[in-house]
Structures are given as C-alpha cells and as structure tokens.
Image (cartoon, rainbow, N blue to C red; front, side, top):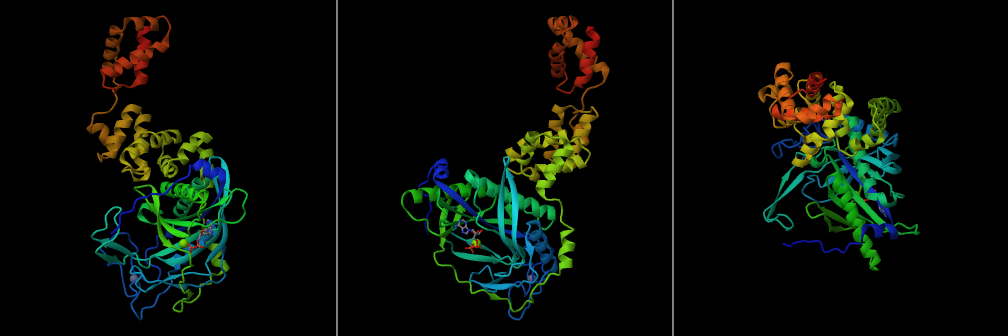
Length: 503
Ligand code: ADP
Ligand code: MG
Ligand code: ZN
C-alpha cells in the first residue's frame, strides 16, 4: 500500500505561456448509444445487475464468432463525416493484444492502420478567436468491462484485496477520435481543449449517436500535452493524462500538466513520456505507466471479421442525414432570438443552456424569458445543488408553463421564482403549485383598492408628490402594497389604481 500526494513543483501558468508553446493531442472515446453491442445482440444499457448483459461472444468464449453491428458502422461514418473526414473505401478491424481482466478475450478488437475515417478538422471559436483542430482519424472499437477493486482501495491509498469484474460494458461499441498534434492555441490551449470536448459532446448529441454524458463515461478523454521552448520547431515529449471525466477537468488537468512540465524543463530536467492519472479531488496528476518504449500490442488483422467496405451511395445517404452542426445552430438561434453577442455568450458559457432554452422556446415561451429563467433562477439552483442545468428535475415545458402564468398575469416574476422552486421540489405542474401554495397574484380590484388606500394613508408625503405630477414616486407606494399583500399583488394594476386615485 502506498499513499500518493502530489509533490510536483509547478511553474506559474503565465510564465509557462511566455517561455513555451503548447502542443495538444486529444484522444476521445465516444460510447455509441446503439441498442445492442458491437459484435453480439446483448443490451448496451448502462447499469444493470453485473454480468447480466453478456453472452458467449462478449465474454470471449472459445468458438464464439463476432458479427459487425451495422448501426455502429453507420454511427462511425456519420461521426467521421461530421468531423470533415474522408470515409475509407475499405477498412479492417485489428486485434490489439493485451492482458488485463477487463478484456475477457485478452485482446480488444479495434482498428489500426485502416481506420474507417481519417483526415478531418474541427473549427472552434473561443472567446471570439478561431482555432482549428486537425483530426487524424476516427476508428471503431469495442469497450472493455469494468473492474471493481475491493478492500483497501480508498481515496488516495492504492492496493486492494481482490477485484470483481462486470462484463456488461464489454463489447459496447466505441468510436475513438484522435487529433493530430494541435499547435497555435497561444495561451488558450486548455480552453481550446475544453471547447473541443464540448463541441464533440454537442456533435454526438446532435447526431443522436450518443448521449455524450461524460459523468457516465460515454465521452472519455485522454489529454496529451507537450511543451516546446518558444522559437523551437521540434515537438517536445508528451504526457497522456487519463481519467478526465468532465469538461472542467480537461481544462484543469492540462493547466496542471503545463505548469508541471514547465517547471521540469526550466529546472533542466526531461519530461518523461508516460501516462498520468488525473486526481479529480486533489486537482493534480500522478505518474502512471511509463511509455518510454512503445507498447507492443502485436496488432494483426482480425481474422474473424470481413473487411468493411461502405459503398459511396451509402456514405452519401448518410451525409444527407447529418444534422446542423452546433456552431451553425448557435448562430441561427442567435439571429432567430434576436440576442446580442454578449447575451449569447452567457448561454454558450452555461453547459446545456442552449438546448434547454431552445426546448423552452419550442414549448411556446418567449426567447428572452426562456433565457432569463435558465440563466438566473435555474442556473442558481443548479449551482446550489452542484449539478448541471440538464440534471435539474425540471422540464423545459414546465418553464414555459411558468412564463405562461406570468404572461397571463396570474403570477409576477417574483412569484414565478417560488413556483420554479416548487417544480424543482417535485410539487408538480406550475398551475397546481400556484393553487396549492396560494401564489396567484391579487388582481381583484376590491382587495387591491383597500391596500392602495392604506398605502396612501401611511405615506402622505409620497402621495403628495404623485399628486404634484411626480409619477415615478409611485414605486414606493407599489412597494408598500406588495408588502401588505405578501408580494402577491398584480403590480401593473396597483400602479394604475394609484395613478387613478391621485390624479
Ligand atoms: P498512444 O497510443 O500512445 O495514445 P496515439 O497516436 O493514439 O498514441 O495518440 C497520441 C495523441 O497525442 C494524438 O492525439 C497525437 O496527435 C498527440 N501527440 C503526438 N505527439 C505529441 C506531442 N509531442 N505533444 C502533444 N501531443 C502529441
Ligand atoms: Mg492513447
Ligand atoms: Zn454479448
């Protein structure tokens, strides 16, 4: 057993940016949302009793034969096309040998020198600046099972008594997307990497090939980074950080590695080529496997599978099914909703906000109101709970219903916030909450008139000013009425009554 802490020396980030150029390399695994696995008919559903979604094929039993899942190939092609890649006329699967209990066959079926898609690029915009990420390849492969290390393995303490294996995930189709070395990100490398991940997530969701949930491992990133002294043209030695499971950690892990490598190089040392693990709780990376010698996976063409040769007709049919890409969609919605760049930036800066606002607008809500609720009240609620906007227990349609109640004058903005709280607390539909909690605004003239009279009586000086023509002073009286009625007065009507009575 060993206890690991980070004792790395770190260079100041800005100093590292002054002295070095950053080179990134991102390897992203997308778990495809096909109903069945890559080579067999077993379910790909997440969770489930361990080892219940298995059969001889995905358990790698002798004599079982894999059959390619056509839907997975289709998804891989659509991903490739969305990345601007060429689609191979002909490609093969390959066996990648390694011995680890999560891979029951003792080899993984992947693709090696003949990937299904290659030579693409992704264009990104980060805070108004444009970047290009060159894509080397996107290939198909199968996922491994999950190991659970039991006994002794807690927190930072390594080592366990024994391991349990769950093969439900073994054989689930994956597409791995690999970039070429990404140069030219200036001081923004980690942010560009994060924006790239967000782009891939939005892209696979728009394609409908994966839900792209990072916390469930549906999108996994290995983040490579190296530094080269300013002016040098020779790539430095990279490290590959694994286990980065959120957009935030992609950025944080790269920042950490840049600062760590900067300190190593500035101290006259050499960066070791190795995989490193991101420690989410501690915010640092630790050394993993050394990669000084390229591992020998003894790849060879998979003899149990025929090559895949997608016809050009099929590829063109699939190209015709491609949805609008995220950046294009953002620009379109901005124009449609009439939002400024600044207003749009808030939306883009809030994960999932765009789609939620769009769904709210589709449910009949005014875009400005939809934007307001998701970026204020609901963003705060998500923050308080430490979850993403899309994990809040509220449907966009419900938000639209709340705004409908505001538009109808049944509730005001302040009460709307209470109603949203009620929806989040599981109290049901907005209209029901208004009734159950007695939240409807008082717009009945009798009750309002009595309250207005009382407010005028209690504030003779304000009333005098309004009589003298200073209508702006009405705000103070409206406030007094609101206090009397527990915030539930129809402010517009109160204002009218005040002016009527005092003119
Ligand atoms: P491995 O199997 O070792 O992970 P891959 O070729 O699959 O290697 O992926 C390596 C990733 O690192 C690719 O995205 C590649 O572009 C990137 N890369 C290669 N060299 C460098 C470097 N010097 N600095 C940063 N990234 C690099
Ligand atoms: Mg790798
Ligand atoms: Zn199976």
